[in-house]
Amino acid sequence: MLQRTLFELVGGQRKLDAMLDEFIRRVKADPDLGPLYPDDMSNLKSYYRDFAMEMLDGPKKWTEGGDASRLRQVHRDIPITKRRADAMVNCAMDTLEHFGVPKFVQEAAQQRLESAVYDMVNTDDLPFPEPPAEAGDRPQPWS
Image 1: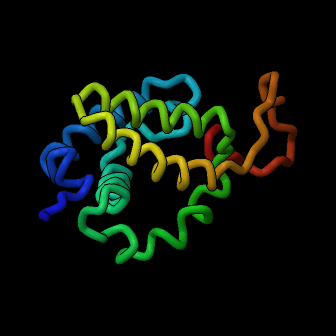
Image 2: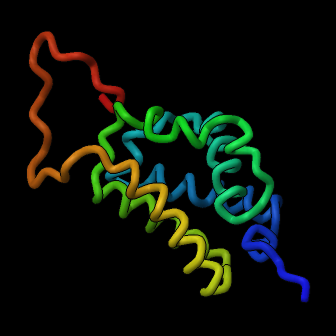
């Protein structure tokens, strides 16, 4: 019996590229996520593409590039809360729904994505806005 990968079931590279454009649009529009990202996402899109391909059992460009071991390290200075992780997962799932990806593929993708995204949570959700920086505080990457 011939089995197809999740990558093939979502439509392969061409469809994934279109989905990434939509996903990035959603992330940039999200009030919790958008401010964390630069205006030009072209460099990040290639990392997201490699990550997504591998999470969907496609080509293994992400780990071959050494990015898997650096995931937490790269995000260590970005305040990733559970709320932001939820928003990231929601953007991804809304994108898959928008493109009509079958539910069983969405569910499998969600499990894999949550495993990676929630592992990067490094900041508690605050019930109030963060205080302004004091003189002498180190600059924050999201400011």
